[in-house]
Structure formats: C-alpha cells, structure tokens
Length: 288
Picture 1 (cartoon, rainbow, N blue to C red):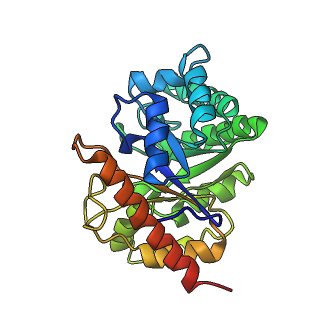
Picture 2 (cartoon, rainbow, N blue to C red; picture 1 turned 135 degrees about the vertical axis):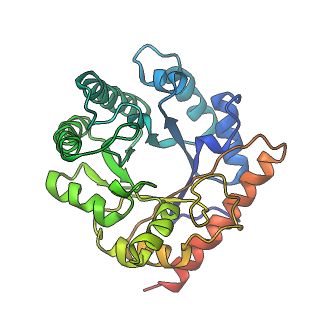
C-alpha cells in the first residue's frame, strides 16, 4: 500500500533482526513501506549503552538516516523497567534520572521528537505508597529534563495494573501538568486492559483527549501481550483508531518482534499493508 501524506507509520526497531546494521535496518523499513523507525533503548547493557555521549551509534545512525532518507523520530525507552523512578533503592532512582538525561541528549542529537516512557513505578520490586510517591517526584524531574531539551515524553500504557489504561496515565499527566509529558498508548495493551476494567478502549482513550501524541499498534490475544502475528489476534483496532483519528492523532508505530523467521522481510511488508488498511479505513470513516 502506498504511503500517505496524512499520517506517519513508524516501524519498531525490534521487528527487524538485531544483527542488521542501522543502514540495513532503515533500508528494510523503507523497502517495506514504513515512513520512519522507532529506536529501542531497553534494559540490556548493549542497548542502554547507546545513549552514552561517546557511543559510535550517533554517527552511524546520522549517516544511515542521511543515506536512506528514513528518519528515526521516536524512542521506546523501556530501560526504566530495570531502573525505575520509584525504586526503593536510592542508587537505582538516581540511575533512572541519569538514563533520562542521557536519553534526552541522545534524542536532541538525532532529531527524535518523542520518547515513550514505560508506565511502571517499579517492575522487579513490589510497589507501595512510597514507590508511587518516588515515581511522581522523579517523573517531575524527568519532565523538567525533557522540557529543557524540547523533547516530549509520552507514557506507554502497560501490561501491569499500575498504568494499563490511558485514564490511569492521565492521573500523572494532570499532576505534572506540563506540555512535555503526554501519552503514547499501546492499543494492544489497552484491549487487554479493557477486559479487566470493563471500560471500552474508545472510552478510555477519550479520557485522554488532547494528550495523546502517538500510538503503538500491536496485535494481542487475551492474556498475551507479545509476538502475536498481525491478523491472528483480537486488538480493538476499529474502536481505538476511530477515537484516535477523531482526536487528531496522526503518528502510529507498528510494534512487533523479529522471532528469527527467514520470512522477516515479507512480514514487515505484510505489517505495513495490514496497519495502513486499519488506519486509512478509520480516516475514511471519520472524514469531516
């Protein structure tokens, strides 16, 4: 399906083999029909080291972007799962802010506009009133770091109860009350959350109207959140995209994972066509 000038469809980096160079990743995304790529900064030492100022990736990625014409516009910053804002360990909390500052610096250097934040107060620890307070306190500091760099933070809605809905994310967006802290929801996660909360996905997204900067489009089935092939799950795309399109959201990322299949390039192209059909159907249904 041809690209649209009405919206951007981005590709999650982990949908491609990790062994590829960045120029090969961007060329693969381009060949499949995507407009941009979202870089992953997760908790592994390899990916977390990318945001260090002296890491050679900065130059490699700038060159690859120039050569291919495919930008890297967003960052999925999931490293805070291991180093959360709300940890009981003071050293981990300090590390969480160090990661935030380096991620913003990296984003500025590469032209990344949005950093998707993981909505966890803690992940490998047990949450309590204190972790929630530390989370909010350090989230405020993180937002100030992002504001200074002119980079927008957007909460991902997660698979855990702490922040599995846009409504829950809005609690912290409202508390911080900054244009630099918004919501970047995961439509797949919201679908599973709706089964728990009994609140329809569209209604939940309406509670965040005016604060959604982009959305992850991911296939899920009940109780499962990863590695479900597109077209085989039951994500509530129609309901979610009708609401997102009506709100004016025009930036979407296809989130899926390379699982080592030799058909990965065909899978990228299929995902591009599948998701564009979903988005463009929503645009047509909601024409004004």
